[in-house]
Image (cartoon, rainbow, N blue to C red; front, top):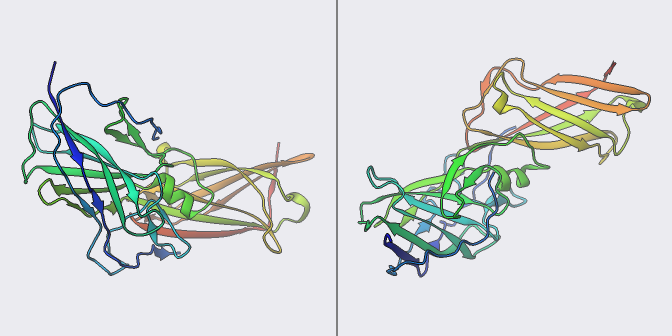
Length: 301
């Protein structure tokens, strides 16, 4: 039976520098039950790690979060987990595990406690490189191993979110590298977010509460397509739909990037395609706003 060493985080402090962070405006994960600890001989090792940034410039500072508040500042939320594993050549994954948030929900600083494991007789040194990934309870892009201890992949689903805060909670990819002895991580956001507001000025061709099938196509790569069925609301004079889509930073928008809209209002099926982009690249850790007004629609057979 192989020996697995246990690294116990006594006070794993994910303390962020007190700075105001907001989005620059250009305007699957499975939820697993806590796994059982391996039934092997273990050795407890105290470990403390801080998470944050000393950079107070909101235009360039690395970001940390679980979601955002009303001022679009990243904050932690209950259920956040910090997955940690070593990355040095020849020993990748010999140290692994996750830490859970203990205090600090709803603020920009938090304390994480948990357990890391070492295997294959590996003992981490001060210069052992580590990678940390922050995963929220609502996460939808990180795949987690069957034993619940490690992240096995990152993939964006085709689904969208109701608003920016929900999108940040579900589709953020915050990672960092650090050294075991330094016990500090500066997380950086790799996702880009696009919030859409589609206003319907089409008279009686659409109704309040209408279900509209939406498909967002940034480019010819099928993996970048996003889709959902949304309900028409009327917060003001006109009916509209609103949603936020997330993409990996670096996703390219073709000149013909578009939103396709389809709905049925008896006796007709209606269809509209609107452009939302020009040749451009969505940058990581940025939020974009796209607003469009629909003034005419086609009847589809």
